[in-house]
Structure formats: C-alpha cells, structure tokens
Image 1 (cartoon, rainbow, N blue to C red):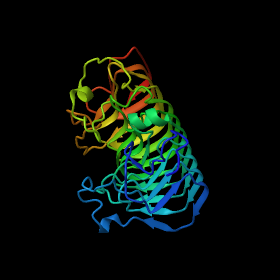
Image 2: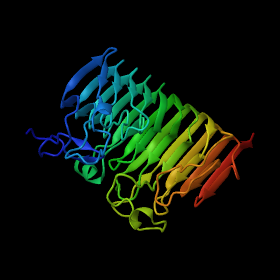
Image 3: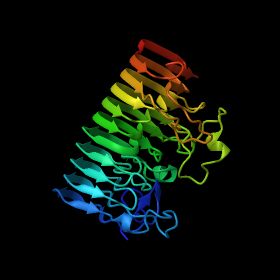
Image 4: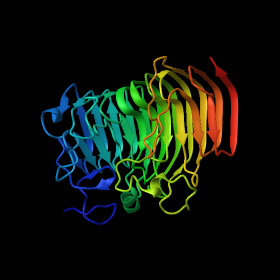
Length: 367
C-alpha cells in the first residue's frame, strides 16, 4: 500500500462520517488522481432502491459506498451529469483540491437515508454552481472530519463557493458540519433558491469536535426560501452520529471547562434573504455557554410564516422542543446585529435573545 504524504503512514482508502473506515467500493473512485473531467448528459445511478442499501443500513460489515468518492484528488470537474440513488452520500471529495461541480442534478427519494448530494470533506477550493438537488438528507454538507482525523491531517475546509443552485428537498439546503473538527472557513453561498427543505442554512457542531473545529468567515447572501421549515439554524448541541450522543457531556447546559474538545464558531453574515411559508422558526441559533458564537449579522431579511404551519424541532438536540412560528431566537452569541428585518405571522416576540454581550437592532418591522 502506498505511503500517505499527509501522515507518512499507509494510504487510507475510505472514510465515512468523519472517520477512516472500510467501505464498499464506489461506482466512481479516484485516489491521488489529477486533471479529471466528467462532462455530458450521462447518468450515474447507484440503483440503491432495488437493493438492501437503504434497509437496515447500519447492519452491513462495511460502510455503504458513495456514488462518487474522490480521495486526495486535484483539478476535477463534473459538468452536466445526473447522479442518482446512491447507497449513501452521492458525491464525496475527501482532502481534495480545486473541485468544480457545474449544472449537476442529484436526486434520491425523500425517505432515503443519508443520501446527501455533495459532501466535500477537508477540501480546498470547491465550486458548486448551477446545480439542482432533491435528496433524502442534506443537499450540500461541508465537512472536515471528526476529531481524530482532524488531529492526524489538519486539513480544514477552505474556499468553498455555492452559487445559482436549487435545493428542492433535503434536511438542510446548505450545511456546515457536523463533522468539522478540522475547521471550516471562507464559505460563500449566493443567489440560491431553497424549496421545501427542513432547514435552509444549517450549521451543526457539538462538544467533542475539538479546538480546531473553528468555523468563520461565512457569508450567505441573496437567498430565496419557500416552504423551508426553519430558514436559519446554528446548533452547537448536535446529537447525531456518535456513540456518546446522549451523554451529559453533550447535552448539559452548564458552563463546562474549555479544553481540547471544545469547538468555536466565529462570524456569520446572513443578508438579502426572502423566506416565505416558514413553520418552526425564522432563525434558531443556539451556542455553547463556555464557547459563545462570536458574531451573527442578520441584514435585509424578510420572513413570512405559513398560515397552516405545524410545530417542528428546529435543531437536532437532546430534549429538543417543538417550535411553531418562533421569531428570531439567539442564545449564547456575543454580538448580534439585526438590521432591516421584516416578519409576519410569528407567534410572540419577533426577537428572543439571551446570554449576549452586545445587540444592535435597526429597522426591525412587523408587517
């Protein structure tokens, strides 16, 4: 087995959900490959609906394959292709550079488990433009591994651009995490339409992701959402996909000591957004008491709730409470800026904020 230039050890052939782990072979697999172009109106179909991949999906001796898995590749372009019905994530670039994905259609049934569309992990220079997604999990989930992978490789996710995309269904339209122990920085999401996703802009982390789990310089601009249950979610209490997910360490609301396992979230800017037919909450941001989010900017945003809205849980947390037509909810954020935000149909106050150091509100309007 070849030596891995990152660690000096053996080359890991696969990873899944932030850990190096054995998996079945993907339909398209590349390792240490460069200058690849897959272009045209062809279809890459995993055919998972006609097998057992989505039934008892945790019971296989190895992890389920992806439709496309790129392991430490460089200068790769996918253009015009349809990718469908993957056994798990559809496209998974790992520790790769200069990845372009243009005019793709990625589809799977709404109830298919873990069928994320594109999950770049620890990559530098990812561009996703003009794509359409309708899947059973997150449409795009930017990741950088769990804590052991992050300590080993120290490869943050950096320089990601998402533009002119349609997210037609999924748990989160654009997600950061939850496997982000290597950190995520410099992410721009612009000129996109989110339709009927559970959450729009979704950031998820938790205690245990580590001190290098820093997310900062994130911009969401010029976004339209229709029928998204909760348009904005930042959740530092995520309770999925780990053996200790239900432990007190994960769910305790006490101010715990900051140590090598504590994540940190920096500055997030959400602006120029129109959201119609929301249901659970306009915005649900929940930081850690020992590691508050540095700054959240909400600017030029309008949110209208559906008249027939039903209660939902905005974030995946232990002891989560269903919400219905909740306005802007922010807890454990050091600095909050709310400018030119309009809202209609919410129940209760437009803004509920706690455990902050500074808050600025200008042009806050009930319509």
